[in-house]
Each structure stands twice: as C-alpha cells, then as structure tokens.
Image (tube, rainbow, N blue to C red):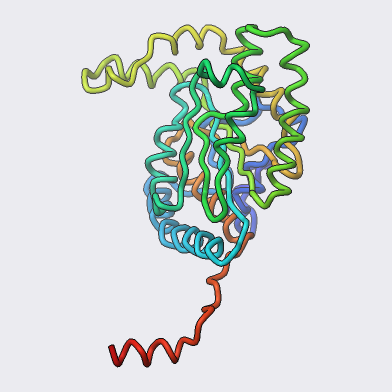
Length: 290
C-alpha cells in the first residue's frame, strides 16, 4: 500500500507516482519532507528490488516506442531533471535512465551557454536538443537554468528573465503539441544533506574529482534558490507539462521515483509494435528455402 500524500495515512490502493509527486502552482515546497517517500512505503532494500523490477517493462515500452517511430510514429518523451548541486542527478542518469537501452536515449547536459549559444535566444539550444520521434530525451539541467541562475545571480535585468516563464510555457506547450510527452523533475534535497554529500567527497581521495569548490558558493545562496524553485512551480507547472517534486535525501527513493514516472508515462502512451508491411508467411517460406 502507498501513503496518502497529504495525510501520511496508508491508502487502500497504490497511489501513482505521477499523482503523489505532482506539484501544482501554490505548492509549499518547504512543506515537502526531502526524506519522505511519497507513493512508496517500503524501505531501501524493497526500493532496490522495485527498481530492478522496472527495468524489463520500461525497456520493452521504450523499444516499442522506438519501433513505432520506424513505422511513422511521431511520439517521444522528454525527461527534464533539475536540482541543486549534489542532489543526485548523476545517480538518476546511471541507475534509472541507464537501465534502458542507450540506443533509444538522448542525454544532453546543459552547462553555461557557449559563445555561439549566447548569440541566440535562450531556448535555441534547448530546441536543438529535443528528442526525435521514438526517443527518450533526457536533459541534465535545462532551460530552467535561465530562470534559476539568472534570478539568483542577477546577470540580466529582472524585466528580461521574468518574461521567460511565459516563454517557457509557450515553448513547452508547442513541444507537447508536436507529440512529445514532458516529464519535469525537481530533485528536492535538504540543506543538511546537501552539505553532507560534498563533505563525504572531501573525506575520500577517490571522490575529490567530483568536488567543485563553487558548490559551496552556491550553498550561500540557498534561500534564494529555494525561492527561485518555488517560482518555477508556481509559474511553470502546467497541465501540459506538470512539475514533479522528488524528495532526494534518500538516493534510492529518488531513483525509484524517476523510474516510476518514466514507466507510468510510457504506459499511458502504450506504444504498439508496428504491423508487418510484408507477407510474413511468404517471407518465412523464402527464408526456409534459402
């Protein structure tokens, strides 16, 4: 059984992760416990078993989506993963996204805009990275950096970045209209856990390479970032592209939650194997004689 998102009591039937994790405008981000496990009431071991059990069904659905595109299908999925530094984006890529066939996945990691990208509107590089039909596109960070980083660090005027919320909504609606399902995930980590993870990296020489001194600078702007994340929920969680807040203090749960979101959306698409465009019996006979 699953926990009810609001009361914390057990419900009589499992709550879909897409329902348990959805954050509509007005959601109080501070009220969501980063160590909670909405939609799942098992422990870490049970979570790992559940994650492993999803690999085969997700892989089959992903293959069906890809096969559908070979017969003229236009549908695709875009998974957008956003979160503070050390919130677990890398683990999501390895343990959730990495469980499906890499031939059917396009991963794009967005860093600071290049000189060429700066010559274009902020959504230009995003549009160029959208998944093609049959593919699952994954954004490690995304266009939301342009209403997070710029809002916190103020490199562009407020009048400019404040318009971007509406531009993002229009853009995402257009992407959905072109047959791409958008799954927007925010990895919600606590300030204490976000401190503990880099501390562990500093204690282990084999983890030094993962440490970025700039992460400490960003921690000093924690409250500003939380306000910026609340704003993107309020302004950019829409019916066409809702926002899902995934509690991320427990790495195993965050991975399980993202995998379930992907599974549920693929199930809703229900891609089908394309029918043969040739006479199967005839080709079997030809093969037998060859």
